[in-house]
Image (tube, rainbow, N blue to C red):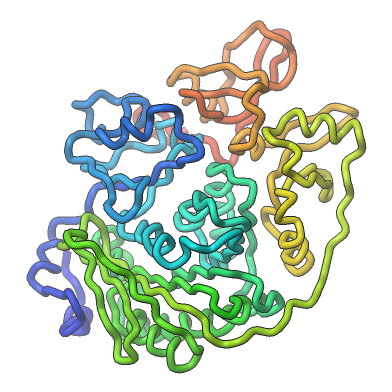
Length: 479
């Protein structure tokens, strides 16, 4: 891979940069894949097995000798308790557990957010969190696993990227995750509302050069400056929604000083932010940098870590915020019969507020209803809570979100599918499953829900979302 001379020259003097090692790493190509397990969907014993090499049910049960199967070269990501780096990249699309939300395929370096959260935010309680630039959803799903987060708003600035964010949020299964498509300045209508704001800012993408040849072709010094200016605009527009003493976690997948340390200096000089230092254990290979204004940042190089280029810094906001004007939105409550039906589909139904929006029934945790009201009164949410389904002619038709939820009542009528049946279901093909009681049924693979079907006298209708279906056969041909 030939890298721009101007790019290589711009990195001289940056902490941790070794030109010879950097070039060698880019000659060898990208590392294998990495994934992060969904602790709320793991079956008994899976995590213990994963720590000895991922269990055989992953990746469609490929044998140890098959390409991409976990082996002795698959190792835990040191800064993320649920993360694993794989020696090779399996065909995740053919693993039903991938579609069930058992894990998320995420670049290992970016999982450093897990450690940053533990150090900087571990003492928070009932935190309200904004993931400002959230698509495709890696950092949002990582944050959703944190037990001290009460409400998480995953926002994506670019409308075309919202569908993939929504899909990944739904598959992860947490009802406290909301999705929006707002401009950063819109969050000024929520002054001091969030305890933590994560900004994985749009950048020049040099940290992903090994994986993305197009990013190499598009790189230029002018684009780096443009990205740096855009990052500052995004932060300046959105920071009013962070409370005083709230935490900002800023990240990029760029090596450029202008997008990393220079933005950190700007945050300290212009936005009254205080840098937070993270203790880095020996042996991780993470490089600490200290900017001119003494901001601490953390750099990842592919010749020092098993991952791609990444930068992260953590700050505490020291300026005061305006008060939040009270607003609320009226919602329609379900009637007694509807409410009883909805409760029968949920684990711990008493902890949820159930309501109707347009033609759908939704649920959101009761304890966070006030926060939901504040957001829903200001934004048109793309996901407003757990979409349970809709009533039609007296019958309840469950939504796919309910099937994916970690709060689906485990006792609902269900059947277990084989690997072949699961892949056919995920392709939205007809399943030859007969017998049983007529009505809705949850289809599972290795204990995890894939979605709903409906039993009829002579067939089972497939209700997997058509826009999410697998569009390849087992040989990888488009179907």
